[in-house]
Image 1 (cartoon, one colour):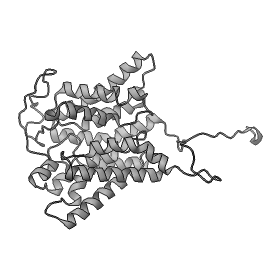
Image 2 (cartoon, helix red, strand yellow; image 1 turned 180 degrees about the vertical axis):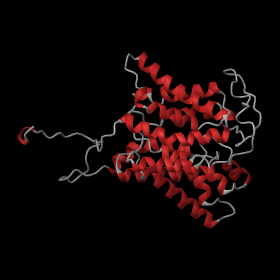
Image 3 (spheres, one colour; image 1 turned 45 degrees about the horizontal axis):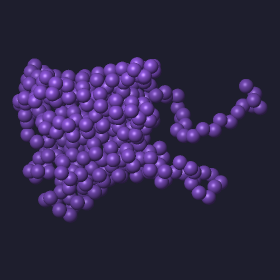
Image 4 (cartoon, one colour; image 1 turned 120 degrees about the vertical axis):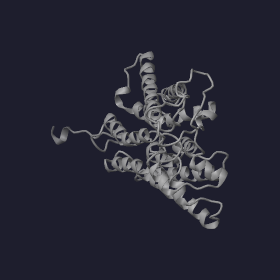
Length: 340
């Protein structure tokens, strides 16, 4: 085509910066999550494998059936719902009854994603919507933990796993509190090594922080994740908790504990960075990360629950469009900012 026949195409962001399509990006996120899943199965055994499988299948099947019901082409081939299922499964405690896992997956995809219009339109992270529903509906089951590295984890399943739907589950081999709960309610601190390696009670995804960070670095290196969001979250949590710890070390935990305990690593690296529910501008991403980090510290230290990552991210998802509107760039040659 000659130069005189070329046309200038003007469109709103986001603009294509590389040849990576949606399915390629999503598939690489799955690759980054596989080591985390494998380590979770190693730590918690068959019950973690069943939880992750049920979570992923329920999300994928829900999206496929909803697409068919609307008469649309199934969108499961773009891998986005597979990521939702894996992340949703990683937020759940091992040993959670399978029927609860499936129910939360249906709610997460059906309400948190499909109801908003599908991929690209969801205002909130669908995996966290599913978990938030279960947290509200079944608080006892969502706060019942099983020990890590149990001797029979690959040969015996918890009695609660295949509880009949809507029947009260029976729990066995229940372990003590999670590190955050032990810190908040008993004043006990977990060893840093155990926190970093994930050898503690907690959700399936509260496993190796090292593997989570490696997965994040892989995606950042491939330009498939905005590094500003997790960096801002970690910096904010470290700075706020570190300042409080310096003021009163007997009351407030160390910043290292706050970084590696609970689901902060998984949430900051793989959930807060949701491309749809997070801001688009660089400054917006930093402000978004600071907001999440501050909310995590506030909820953990002064809220009624020991963990606050889920609520912090969902609240920041709601604020995300307003952050973009606040910091939207000025159009070159004009005095004011561009229209939203």
